Image (cartoon, rainbow, N blue to C red):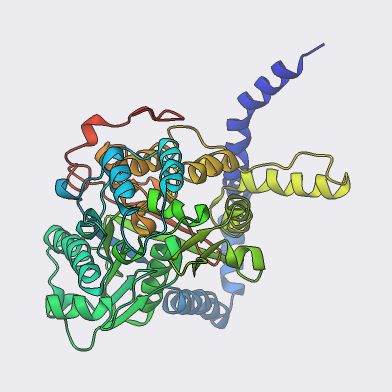
Length: 493
């Protein structure tokens, strides 16, 4: 009698054949029909073909030619324009902003003596345990204002961080693409926790002398998934802009004003995870010099549920210290949001073989009252690379488990978290830069970016590579040779 393990092994061997047949069903079906039609046509004599041609009226011929041509023209006029990524650039952190664990903890201990701060020795011990299990390395960076005691959290220091991060990223992007600031038609910036007046977009327009008619939007309060929301918004703007227009998307999070000096444990976690970072991305409806094509943007929101709405919540603690409260139910809520996003994006990107297996599993569970294990689609059949928001080790672990991904699939996310920390909405761009710096990107490869954010939101963007990076320049230029690194469960230092 055949054992279950050998049967499973044989099924795995047959899966590639099944996928080939189902994914190419039309070709498999059309080939014998085309052969049969050719054989029948060969049997018909020239006299009979002539009689058929004479029987056709001129009106029929006209309709046969005009209707398909008109339908094709209408489709080309009404279909959404393709949107391309010309290039992107990430903020390169500075050595003088580096915060090793020892420096971070010593700084936190000294903050306990600052008048007005409630953080105590017990809180420092708690942050020590968090850091040891966080997956962060010794080279992550905090803004200059956080290196002072007490940390500067005023408007001047916050604006200084903004200018350092976003101007550096934009300068690198404009140098890489050769596009002048005057050629940019659309500007979208996202930063959740710092929204000064004038806005970020005003700061950028003034710095680079952009056109007075540029369409600009500053998104705030949208959380760590706001980068993909900004991409989707820029895509929508490009649909109504002149053909060949350029859209600049800037994603960052300003750390300076958001250092928490209280002792609520649920609000201390952001201090340990969030680090400075940012990215600038240039989109266009022109394929010229483009490096990626934007295939899909799918957004899902679960904010109608009270638990999801409050799981990432900015508030003041009992002593009036403002910070971000992360709920203990965050991972469960993120899992539910991911399932909703998978349900939405799956039919758009998965091959027919995976969709058929999922549909059969769904029907079997309905008939057999959930006694059949649900089938998890293999998203590796739809994507070669995965850029999962580096929100923390637990976030990456949960997505790896939920999506059935390998260690190599999530390597970019783990290494970005280790090298740069949680850079919020820009983290997916550091991960894409890692994949390219490693030389793993190939023409035609597909990339899935997944972001999570307050609200609670799970957003996805799918890209197709047109032209891989020629060099490893970028945020990983000086450190890619050291990666990947082994990240222990608990770091001893």
